[in-house]
Length: 312
Ligand code: AMP
Ligand code: MN
Ligand code: MN
Ligand code: MN
Image (cartoon, rainbow, N blue to C red; front, side, top):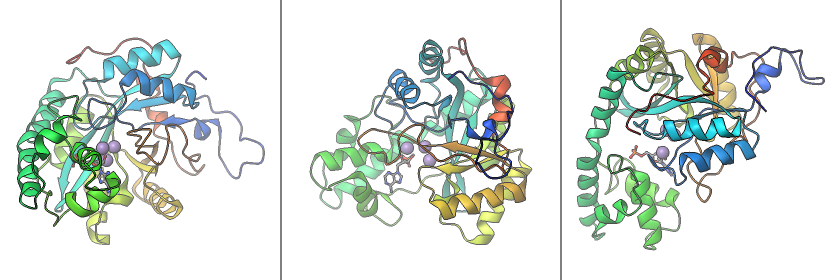
């Protein structure tokens, strides 16, 4: 189905104000091999189209290198596409992810910010491998690298895949619990981008900034309030209400917070891999009718031709 946002009357039987705009199968959060996903951008585009996605964004961690291929593949399939990225941010002692949508990938300040954010990853990965070696797991850096297709983007996920392959853990979730989260041997505290910086890089490039999977952060009520209010003050405009890591209680809570803070609501699976991801592309529930879908603001930015060939 081609991308369209014409507001048409509510679907019969659907409660309240839900319109075709709300029912659009948008999936605005996914990862390719350019970060820690396992599929190419073209394979993701094909999977999104096959699953009935109407509007798709590729949102690799701190990286836009896959966007040109994604846009070309989406165009060939008649799939609506917007540029995306997921920026790693440090806030109140936690890592927070900010998704950028519909920006100009050729923007110099955005690219400089992303390059700086990626820049610390290799040293961090070496320190992670040192921590794992100290508990008897030798060779983790080279092991993780075997799963990396973009050498600038070594992530904890690549370590997790190697530790599953070598039989140390049964699945990536257990690797994170035993080795890669705060206080565990392979965890290395890291300073990512500032919240204001990340929002500014995105909005300065003409994009919309969105708080990713808010239900995943271990914030107190006050810290979470600070995140939302500072994000808004910096010019952030959206929050993921529907994401692969939210249960129904999270969806209700962050839907209410979207209304309270005047944020648009986003919807994205956070798909990484057919073998690992619980939720497939395009398979989230519909957005509640009381919320403003972020894709209403993205309409002028939907691509049907080519993107800026950044780092392609
Ligand atoms: P990094 O950017 O290197 O810190 O890696 C973060 C990535 O690790 C996230 O984007 C997820 O893909 C993955 N991740 C984080 N926590 C978990 C977990 N508990 N189980 C599986 N994957 C996780
Ligand atoms: Mn990831
Ligand atoms: Mn994330
Ligand atoms: Mn993600």
